[in-house]
Image (cartoon, rainbow, N blue to C red):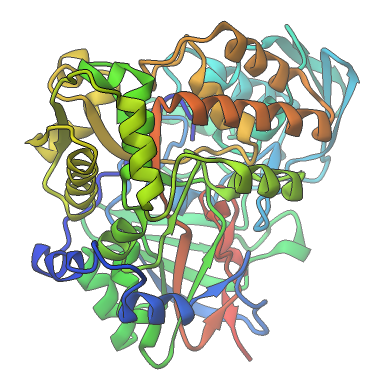
Length: 546
């Protein structure tokens, strides 16, 4: 997913009565018993244990129906990625530990600081048996980079690209760009068969269209409103990575229906979008719930309207938010109070350096202390401040976050209220200035496809389309320097500087890390627990325990 053109996730509303019951814990001094027990029963891993045996068929549940199976289409949603990650392949591949490795390209190297050369595999084939040719690769890159494509913004530093050998693709860059390499493990690196896409025209990606991909599973059928079925690609070009499952049927359902289907055994697994719903599963016999690193974080996005244009007010509010209470009330304790706007899934290299820097960040306590409240009031000073308007859509998570911000404002002497925006309109605030003018703060969960903090922090640049209050030429230069730093250690140092500057300015107020969460029936295993499932062929690893 492109960081600056997010596929918005509007979560299904959970039962408000359940949230209200949990909200009683918001003012407590520690985790509620239920929340603590839930977390204790969850395994924190990159991937579930490797499957020992093949699986004939599985039913997998998702939160809603994919909107389009052409991942280059801006209308595709999160579920499109989840399904088609098993069908389509990219130049590079995101791994379960969130590192980047070879994909359809066997290797890449920087021949010069501005010459990035990929060596393509010579044995890869599409599902119809046609070879993956250099013409398909160059055509796919051109399509991915075209304005209006969902991933076009990942190519700002690409001057040109062309075939430079029998199996060699060379990108000529305007400047070195290490983040571009990582973007090519996401949808920016998607490779599709030219003749299939062109033959389908506008119908490509719709229920009547075949896939045009080369992955370990292939599209069998899409019955609109009912299901999508993938089958094992029998002649997959890499036998060592062939699918262990013969057939996967995807069905979509609301949170309660997903939980009930897993409990009754009518489904074998699900990546849980609304992680609070997993609290019932963690103690269900025969169900395994695992969590892994992800980049997805819920934050308060400041619009630039009203008093929150002042960074001192943003910093004061951040000090007063009860993140631990929000986690227990809205996420059943299965999230994590978080200081950054991007999760630890972005730490695809130099993890120790990023963890150390994260630990040192200040100003975003899990539970505000008396000293935090005193510091917040000091930041505000004695002057009067404008009332704060927080936008919610009535969903359980956003309502909880909104109430927590109102409570934080009241703790430090600010006035705050909530305005309701219809769910169908809510996600438009990124692009709709009139909608942003209706509130000072919106709440959203945000993730990026790059396992690199620089891949997120570029959103703090003055030219960003997803933050509207932070303009800092020194930060802008650091973004450029970070992308240009091809050495991981050097880039990590710059990423840490970006994180500190963002933390000091707080164009977004970070709240809760939502780890990738997968629930499996007791008979199956093998899939990643991390957020890699959006781009990694996770279903191919699904098999039996013995």
